[in-house]
Length: 70
Image (cartoon, rainbow, N blue to C red; front, side, top):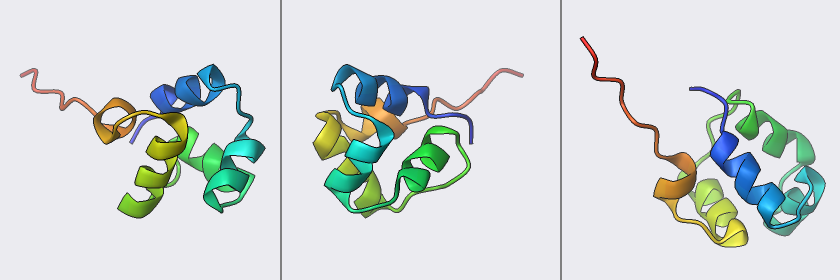
């Protein structure tokens, strides 16, 4: 799992700090940082909460294209 730059960009576009997003969805700032850095795999419910706050779909924030090059 790589860094989640899509989530970070969406958060910044909404004008939210990691702390503000964390407070809105009921997690710690560290959790948001770990997700953005690709060091924590959030539950589906947490992903949905993040999507709702950032006004993005699951696909927009969390879908990773599979590398199918041979």
